[in-house]
Length: 179
Length: 154
Image (cartoon, rainbow over all chains, first blue to last red):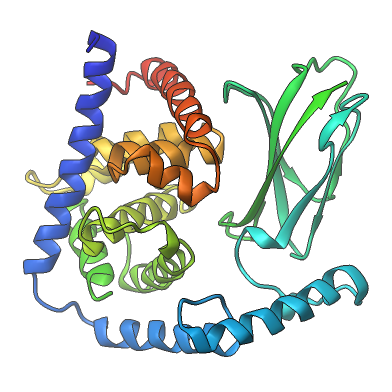
């Protein structure tokens, strides 16, 4: 193992130790104030998710999930634009539209989002995962690179949606290359 | 799932209690949600509590960042036996991973922190093992650059 890899592995090992130590200490500690309320809230959320047909390993929920998927597809592609109340958290709320796959140019980045009242961060990477360009705080679902921006012939790009507190509430990613 | 509020409270105390109780309650709810969404990634290689602890710490760091808390401010209020969050190896690692493309970061987390075999990571992403290995090693190179620039390696 090279010296560089050793240093990296030391950091990973330290991080793993930190996680394990904290996990053990928490296991040995007593209940925290309000813990029961939080666990109850979590159970309620699980019940909510089940009612909304969130995918689950439970066989009975599969049918509900399939029905929800059908309704969702209809809502996305055929139905009216959903309001904020109809959205769910997670990467499924954003779809990268262009560029995707082989294209003539990277002249326009476009995505579709079911989230409202959010800002978007756009990140463009090369195929080695190096960040090439970043645009933060976008309010529209399109972005056009300026003429001075040079992008590699193959890119991976991501969009992160952030709410008013800057928390990431959804993301999507796509790959594209110049023909 | 009771470990989530306990881990958050314990970590907060050790960090000099920069977050108020209501912040911790909100964060616990967020962490519940994150764990729920990513439960398919749990492969049983570590105890569930250990796996969940990682999300607690990541969420904690994100809240501190959102609140604009600086490590220096934490150090001023921390007791001598308390560590600022900046000194945590995982904090440095998360900060560096945040600069990587999401799939590369997740691959490194699953391999280096959860110590999952490449085959299981590939199954999670639904990709060939070679693709995942490629992304992992390229991601490590990028991570090394980032950590070196930040002075993050020990």
